[in-house]
Image (spheres, each protein chain N blue to C red):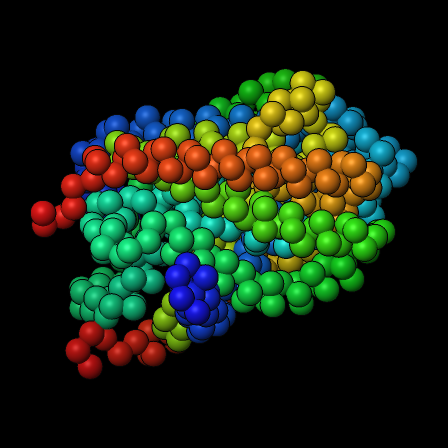
Length: 261
Length: 267
């Protein structure tokens, strides 16, 4: 309960801070429009040449793209800003200020920053998903929508864990900024369902970079693909990953020597 | 060596040494970049397969060749980002550059050219792995190889000059990200970076012919991975020269007007 209240307070302060820069909303909107436009152009090019891509129709791929934009917005508004701040604090030794506070360190480093204007993509992605789903021949039932919501939440947690795992590397390696680029490059691959990729890449995008759980599984729930086992797998994977991340975080903290030590 | 050639030699050498120090960072950066063409390649191979082997006359093996050459051309294409101008102008870094006796663009051209030496060395293993994984089909003549070696530097110059000119918009406004986004999106779609230009609808392909973008991506890639006639190979080089001339003139013109707007920090 305290944890939730703490996270809520941090988020509120973060949002208030960002509200000072309202013009940025316009830029986020332009950026979002360009990105979605490009994605639609690519879809049009691909489906000008074929009716289905490894079993996915154009409408179903639009659902995947919507989820990809939505999760992308979540990453850029909440996850990535916090992780970049954490990298910087480890480099400079200013993580001291977090560790001396009487609350859980992992919680604090995960909720300190929020870039609210990037959250435009969450809304745009959600809108895309709704439009795409309405146009599908088979409307998903209530259970499908619930499965979608659950899969999305699990996917978000696994992406967060993956990011935090990458960031804890900063305790050993100091220059990590290319990792951000590396992740962004990899994340682009999630625009397509992982089943499009050849076997070795599909395994990589499922286990190493959890794109499958963050994007493909939620989209599968809405497009009438069997989800019972997938969802169970997603739960198991997320729990395992969260445990590993927690252990890695605690182990990594021992490496931290602080600013003045 | 004295004069401009001496400057280029020295700055390039310094760039090679600096960038070798950051080889891990360089590698992570390059690996992140490989995801982009691999995604395009996988998608278009799947489309080719669903159509019984080829799309618009391009087979899976030819797509593989296209996107593997893409990775080299893309690396050659990395030049000073227009976003760098924000720091240069806001923090007054440009002041130091203005004190030197040559036009500042020479430092950027030389520095990024030197960086390419490191990049190409690091690129070779990536290309080998991609070739084993995706089995490209190549058919390269001696002339194509020679034209390619010239064309990648042509592409480098065109993109350097155009992005330099674009970056100078920062002299007038710092709200540049939307303008850059539009530019980079047009480039993505109309250069051959996203898909081989042959797959675009006719009107878009016709538009691309009149823009510089294709001479920085599609043309050099197709020199090696496509089957251009001797005439097309040489016309491409000539048009690259035209765009280099245009870019140089643009940089010179914008620089003359823009630099008057520059008020250094501390002055």
